[in-house]
Image (tube, helix red, strand yellow):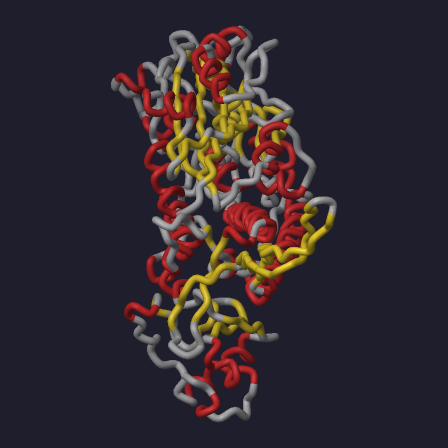
Length: 599
C-alpha cells in the first residue's frame, strides 16, 4: 500500500507560489499517493480498467499560461485549445484555494512585426489567428492594428502587478464520501479527478463528445491584478541609429536610464527624438487613459494600488486532462504548430505591407541594392533623387531717368528642381506590395475557416513564400553623410536582425533562420527574379544555366562595391529563380549562347 510522501512539497501544496505548479499536474506527478479514489459508478469495473493513479501524462501534455479571454473565465472551466475558447462547463473535481500576495514585474523587449507584438503581450498562437480572421476587441485588436515598422525602433513595455492566484487544489479524500462542502484548508492527501460523467465520456473511443463538453484542458489557476502595455516607437534614419536606440532602451527596466528616456527622449544622430507611445491597460476603474510618456510614468507608480482596488483577471493556467489520475490511457491530439505558422506569417506580411508603403510615400529617403552589369558588384542606388538646374539669362528692364524710360539689360538667375525616380526599383516594390496584399487576403481567409471548426486545419505552407523573399528586395534608409549605408545593412536590417530575434524568442518559430539560410538570402541581394509555373520548370532552367557554365563564383569587387551573389540561385520551396542582370538574356531565351551573357 502506498503511503503519503513526507516531503514538505507533498505535505503542503497550498501556498506554493509557482503558477500551475499549484495545480493538479505537479501534485499528481510529483508525490506518492494513497490508493486512488474510485468513483461510485466505477467501483465495479474490471481491475484492468485504467483508473490507477500510476498513469502519467504523455510528454506533449503540458500546462499553458494564457491570456484570459474578453468574455471572462471561471476556475475549473474547460478550454478548447483548437478554437482558443472557453468551454463553460466543469469536468473536474477540485476545491478552490488561493495565494494572495502581490507579484510585480516589468519587461522591455524589442519587436519587429505584429506577431512579435502579440507574443510580447502574451497572446497565444490560437488567439493571434482568431484576431486575424474575425472581428475582435480589446488587446487582440490593439495588437493587430498597431503598425510596427522595420524602419523604426519599436519596443514593448509590459508592467504587471498580480494580486496572487486562485487555483484548483485536490479534493481531500475524507471529503469525497461526505455531504459537507470540501475545504482546501489542511489538505494533506487527495487528487483532482475527472467527474464521473466526464470520465464516462473520456472512455469512449471517439473523443468528439468529450471535447465538445469539456475541451482539451481545464482552467487550473487564474491570476488577477492590473497590467499596462506600452508600445514605444522611436524614428531612426539608419541601422547605426537603430542599434544605438536598441542598446539604450532594451532591458532598461525601472532604472533611471529608462525614466530619463521616457521624460526627455532619446539621442538619435544630432537631435533628440521624443518617444511615441501607444498604451493598453487591463484593470482599474475611473482613472484616465495615459496619453503621453509622462502619463505612462505616473501610471507605473500607481499600478500596485490599481491592481488592489480594481483588479481584473488577465492570466490563466490551462492544465491538460491527461495529467489527471483517472484519465484513460489515450491522448487528446492538439497541434498548435499550424496556428504558429499562420500567426508568424501574418505578422511578417502585415509589417511588410506597411513598410513598402512607407518607402513609396517618401522614395527620396531610401536606397536600394543594384548590381552593376559590367562589374557584377553591388552598390546602393537612391530610389529618387532631386536634381536642381540653374538657368542664368539676360532680360531687359526699364530705368526712368528725368521722365524718360530707358531700356537696360539685367542678369537674372532662376532655379528649378525636378525629382528623378528609379522606375525599375519603384515597379519592383509595387509588385512586392501586390504579392503581400494577396498573401494577407489568403491568410485572413484561412484563419476564418480554421477558427470556425473545432477539428483544426492543415496549413498550406507551400502556397506562401517566406517573408524574407520580399524583405531582401526592400531598400533601407539612406542615412546621413557620416553614416553611409551599405548593401550589408539591407541584409542585417531586413533579414538577419529579425531572424535572430525570432530564434531567441522561439527556435521553432518559422521566422527563425540559421546562419546558412541567412547567407542564402544574402546571395539574392539586388538580383532579378522570375517565377515559373512549377518547381520542375524552374529546375530545368537552372540545369540549363549550369551546363552553360553561368553559375560561377561572385565577382571580386574590392573597393568597387559589395560583392554580389552567384550568377543565379533558387528559392527553396518556391518555383522562383533569382539571377544577376548580366545573364538575363540566357535566362529568358533558351536559345541564347553563353557568349550572349557577360557572366
